[in-house]
Image 1 (cartoon, rainbow, N blue to C red):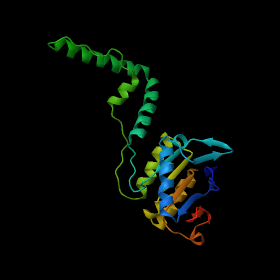
Image 2: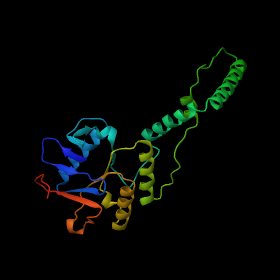
Image 3: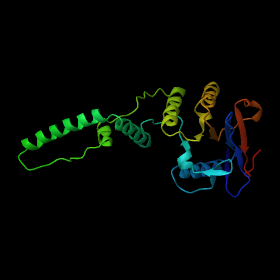
Image 4: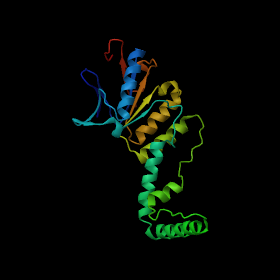
Length: 224
């Protein structure tokens, strides 16, 4: 798998057995590229191409970007919507339970209608999706401000969305070296591809070549 930049020589290998780290020397280029990737992950157009076996994949469907690793929200609208959809599918298999609940709801609503001084009526068709919404389901998540938060978030995203690629910004400025190593190894053990984009300065000699595939993009837009 590769992450490529259209109309340029930038071509980053994304091996499954290593984390890909791209460091930018020019902060203006860094900002521009982060903005472009973010727009594409939100469904917009841009120059970044996710390529696997000469087949292109849209970043909004197959990529997941984390702009702020210090603050991740497992109860974001997109994740809760996906959770509700999955629970609704599970509920479709529980036909007797759903039918019983719907009948009880109708009886409750009818009692309200009959007791109200004006003529009113409730919706007669109540689907499983509406029953799930009544539950207001969310994930239990107690923020600790450490690496556990990020790992818990990844577990939720992987279960619900299963992206082909995770993209994180300035992770090395949030986690210390030991935490980075633990997090990298956790991602690799799950066989999840990770690209870290950073403005941090690192030396290739200091990278653990067993788990990290490092690139440095210089001020001339060239890979060192």
